[in-house]
Image 1: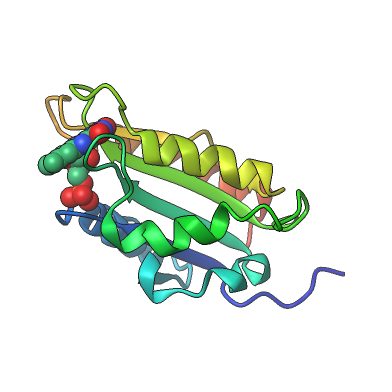
Image 2: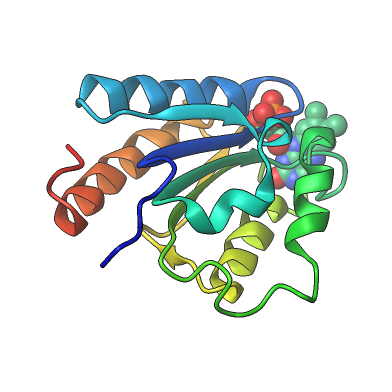
Length: 164
Ligand code: FMN
């Protein structure tokens, strides 16, 4: 039997200048519109030790500096990198990653890519392929966010029809 989960849908965001926050809130609003209870939190307001107790976590993270995490993600990221975490640590946890970046930078969306790889490493299951927002797109990050959200809802519904 699947144990009781803390949140059905949790959105964790890490933003340096506000875009990832806007994107996270948009995903949250869309989720509520579809009737799915959702919790939206900045990653530095979340205890990473609780991750294994979650059902589905959507990460919305930007890249800053030269491929660096936003300041608000440093503690969380250091925690996830601990060698003591096993390959099964996040078994049974579903996740999706949407990154915000700019393909004009060499380390395009480096944080989203690193996070996606690390979550897989820790045994979590990806719901959809990571989405990569790009400032260079004529519509900005929303150019990638819209199609990514459509596939996210479609996949979540396939996995668990009680979602939407
Ligand atoms: N995007 C990347 O893909 N890789 C980078 O290394 C990168 N470095 C950045 C450094 C600075 C100082 C700034 C202002 C932007 C950088 N970006 C980079 C682009 C941001 O990730 C992009 O503008 C994103 O939308 C910002 O999201 P945020 O407001 O949530 O932090």
